[in-house]
View 1: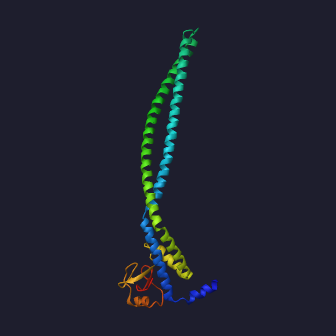
View 2: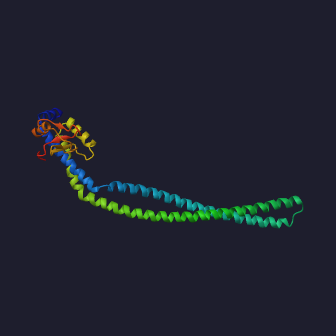
View 3: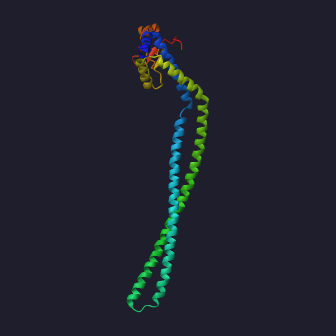
Length: 251
């Protein structure tokens, strides 16, 4: 089968090769036009999805941190309760001391428990302020998240609508492009794809228009213009490297 294909390739005239390339270019340009209709929507949707995922992670972290602060406040309140119980106990024992040593030890314990209460109260104050700030942050983040979700829903609907409208046409064009590619010899097809990839507008095959290359618009010498019209050889623009064809060549 490979030998048969090579024979077909070799028997193909330059004009037939140019026509096949021109048809492929027109088909791919139509696919590019459909992609342009979608614009930046696919990227915008992806960016929004990534941003929302980051927000959701932050929201989870904020919520976890808020719970930890609540637990910390509860723990400090329990410490205060324990310290007050001990404080009451040591004060009662102070009335029953038998010597200075016991008095000093109890006095130190009472002082220590007082400091523990003060420290816990300070921590509760700090944790409460931090907890309030965290709640404010969570509320603001939820609001922003909801707004982003609304925008994402709208963008997805818009994109889905455009895709639904153009999907069938694009599939047909892609199928057509595949069939056209089989009619072009591999070496030439590789060169075509390389030129197309390097062109900012995806044009690898362009017509000569008003004595100039239809890709870069540089003037083409008369002899080269004649060569293009004769279809006897593949002419490449010396400035941009695009393949040039006669504008009257049919699709």
